Image 1 (cartoon, rainbow, N blue to C red):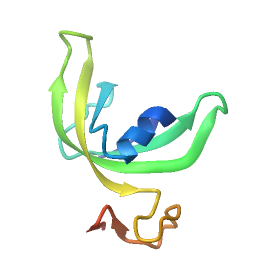
Image 2 (image 1 turned 180 degrees about the vertical axis):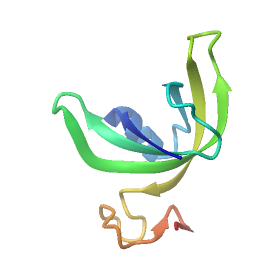
Image 3 (image 1 turned 90 degrees about the horizontal axis):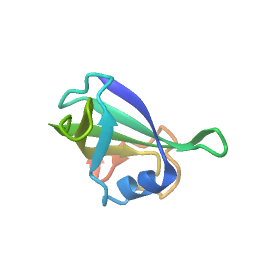
Image 4 (image 1 turned 120 degrees about the horizontal axis):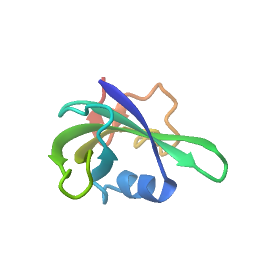
Length: 104
């Protein structure tokens, strides 16, 4: 299943750089290991999406309800980025490579 989620630019950039490898989220979507996240950069001030996105796979889920009821930590692995790693341009939809691996 693909979950379409908003993410603030500061967090988005850390995910893109490979530094942030987990998401703390309300489990209102019944996340499962193997599900995909489409993390779409969102500017609150501009009230809209920037067009940048990352597709990530949920590799592990940790229930943290004892800290915050209904929340989970999603460990993620990047599969695709809107920035093409072959040409360093925004993802045009024609490139099938992301982070050194072919994406179907």
